[in-house]
Length: 254
Image (cartoon, rainbow, N blue to C red; front, side, top):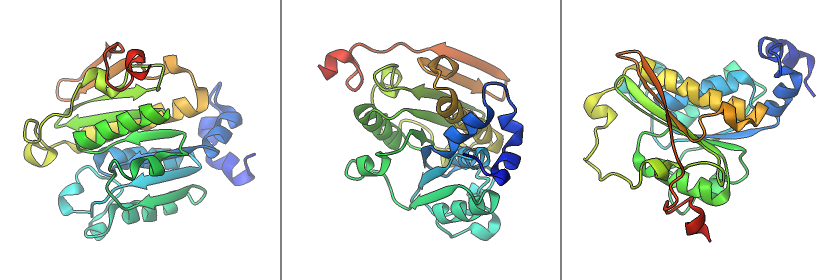
């Protein structure tokens, strides 16, 4: 049930047809994990907290740096030097006191990931490295937790949502982890803050649609959204499940 404060707070989304208070209660009773609190994760967390997702875990090992502030909207100049998880939680507690936030000030690895992601309804992968993206993909497919993965660079990026045992996974598109040094990083080639913000908002929207509607046809499932903001191109590509995929194929899992 929603209390009177919650009914007023979320009124502008509960009056949307097919959303209603039932949809809001679904968000309130859901648990979402956000991995990475950089440009993508900042926008994701902000809007999930605004939307009223009841319990949110946040994962990041880094501390806030001055060069983060062009795109990482959770952090201010007064946050520089603080743990990103602490900085984010402090701001989000002021934004919505009804959302519970759990901090994981650590780096995900093969030893700890299963214990951390287990129990969540949905995972948001918003890190800035391929190692974490592949680790999250492989583990979520194994355990059976739906997730969304986003990646951004300069003015462009892409997003895919994965429903284990139903859709193509990240490895169906990107087969193996690229070798370090074979791809540019944000610190090397840069990123516009609005790029990270837009893609983070789309990731958050995927979460909300999944939790409220459970309609895979409304999600970026078996699709990859690619946007180039420099040229204002928005494209959605069909993604087919790879029958030889080492992670999600039925042949592999027999």
